Length: 379
Ligand SMILES: *Cc1c(COP(=O)(O)O)cnc(C)c1O
Image (cartoon, rainbow, N blue to C red; front, side, top):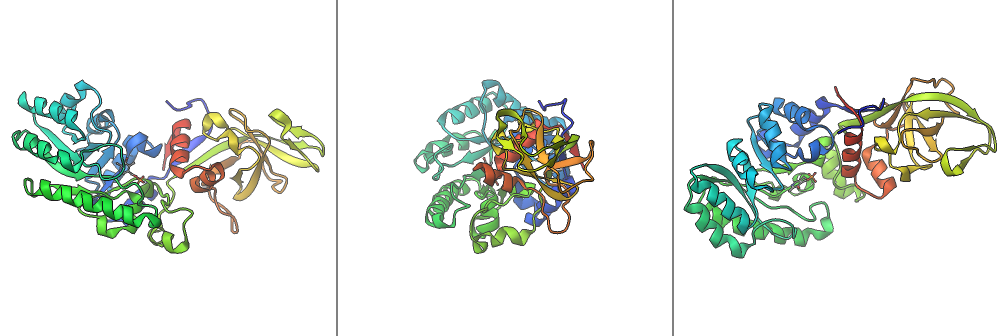
């Protein structure tokens, strides 16, 4: 799965992960989202670390991820957010005690058939309130209620929906409409199952919309240290900054060699960089095969010996070059930090947010890419 043969490393700081989780609220009120291999941080190590600080629930993407957690001995409530995709998975969900979101009439039919064979299944009711993706609409509730009520083997535990714009204060009206729709659907379910628990917020909602915390918040990006409000005003990001979350992932790669480049000489494919004066260049063992987007060529920075250095020339498949003229102490074997690493006074480490901004994307994509392209080590 990873690019196993690379000397670059994805460092996952499980202590920071645990601190972030604890800062975000009571363990019982949080459902950490560990889908897509825990946003590139590694499903099992992340889930185990969170279990150590009391996590009682996990949101995964697929049934197979849920099974992997069970096989690792985790006993928490587990919700595969994408639901069941293969017929065989209904039985598995029952066997492994996963809490399956039902999101349309077909799901309901399959769940009912399973229950009619005498098996039991924990279920979540997924409501469509404005995301336009998965879930029952309010008009479909009567059929849902009738099917579920007549089958005691189906145990509704949760009612879920997802906010489209929790990170956009300018969409507060839309968000409120989603919440009202959600509450209406919850009331109909609660009348039958009084203990059913609600979950609407993602990270952005958890931080900024306490009125929608209900029983459970699903937190993804925030437990990995990311800011769902990046780019907004200081006032709008206050809720994030107040938590003092820490980035969990860092990425390093060794310097392969250090060499001189004379004024007028060019570097790497396409000659997009030519030295205007004599410089010292370090060749680093990272590239687009290890998650460093080629589009960052000539514009990204790295940390070496605690200082910011500029990347120069086209980024290659597994090598990239940096200008280390100001760091005469750099030697082959030294570590370059593509994300994180410790920075000297006056310098700051490169964050997934900074890299995402440079690329015109979001930190989620950077974390997944880096985590999936580099062998992971845990500390
Ligand atoms: C991914 C996901 C989340 C977590 O979102 P973050 O912004 O990372 O907190 C929550 N709920 C659902 C349904 C998701 O798919």
